Image (spheres, rainbow, N blue to C red):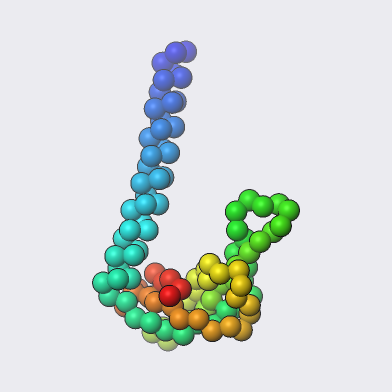
Length: 104
């Protein structure tokens, strides 16, 4: 019984550290790609909502944006609750990989 508790604690720590590392590494890799080879485009705010956190009371959200690259439409989270549907923003995306994008 004691070994099971130890193994489950180790497994939990490995999963937690793995998820944290993946998130950190992905963000760093995304920023590297956007810095190294990116292009800027105009994007329009659309009606897709992205709810912030676990706030059951305020229900804060941001809208998504949509832009055209390589004759396809791509979307992303604006990360700005002040923007409204129809606003225009600049986004940067990785050349050859527009699904990796960020508001500028």
